[in-house]
Amino acid sequence: MSLINKLSGTGVALITPFKKNSEVDFDSLAKVIDFVIANGVEYLVTLGTTGETPTLSKKEQIEIAKFTVEKINKRVPLVLGVGGNNTQEVINHFSDFDLENITAILSSSPNYNKPSQEGIFQHYKAIADASPLPVILYNVPGRTGSNITAETTLRLANECENIKGIKEASGNMVQCMHILKNRPEDFLFVSGDDHISLPLIACGAHGVISVAANSFPKDFSDMVRFSLKNDFQKAQQLHYKLLVGYDLLFIENNPAGLKAFLSELGLIENVLRLPLVPLTSTNQQKVKDFLASIS
Image: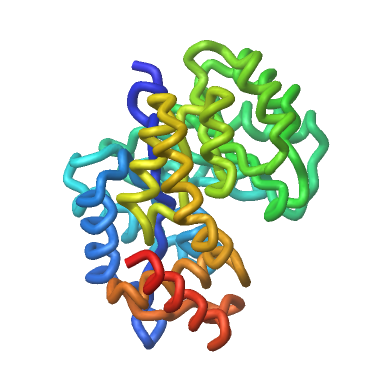
C-alpha cells in the first residue's frame, strides 16, 4: 500500500517533554499523544527536530520510541525520525529500534557537512538500500545548510525504490510545484511548513507534518481536511484564525514557542534542554494573549 493511503492529512511532529530536572517526562508525553489523537490528527512523528533529538542520548531515543509505540497502541500510524550527517551511523541506528509498529522512516538531509547534490543523492540511496521501512526525505535548508533540489528529489523518487515521499520545508513554492508536477504517482508529498500547508495542498500536496498540530490539533487538522476536500472557504477561515499562532510558534525557535503553548495548555512543564531556552516573558505573554483570543 502506498504511503499516500497511510499518511495523508495531518501528522504531528511530537515534542519531548522534560521534567524540571531535565529528565524525559513520559507522563506528559502520554498526555500530548492522547491530546492530539483525541483531537483528530491522522498520524504522529517521533524523534524529529521538534522533539529536540540533537540533545537526546541514544538510550533516551530508544526509550521514547518504545514508549510512543506502546502509548499509541496502533490507534494511528507512527513515523520514526532517523537522520544525521554521518551516513553509516544513520544506517547503524536502524538496528537500535523495534520497527514492527513503525510505518516509515523520516530522514533529514545531512546538516553542517553541506554535501553536493550528488552527495545528498548517494547519502539517501545508501539509507534507502539499508532501511527495512519506506523512507521519507526531509528537506529543511534552514536547519541543514543545504537544499535538496527538485531535480535531486525526483531522481531519488524515480531511482530508489524504497524512497516513498518527502517532507518539504524549503519554503520555496516553485521548487515544491516542480516536485508535485513530476513526482511518481505513489510518491507522498507533505508540507513541512505550517504557514504554507494550505497553498501546498491546493497545488497537490497530501498533507503536512506539523508543529502547530501539537497545540491546535482540532482546528489545524480540520483545516487540512477541508483543504484536501477542496473546501478552501472553510479551510481559509481556520488558517487565518491560527495564522498569528503559527508566527508565535516560531518567534524565537522551535520548539521553544511550542513548549510555551503546551505549558499554557497545562500539558507539559516549560522546560527545554540547552542550548535552547524558554521564550522571553514578553513573548510568553503573547502566547497567553493569543490563546485567550481564540478560546
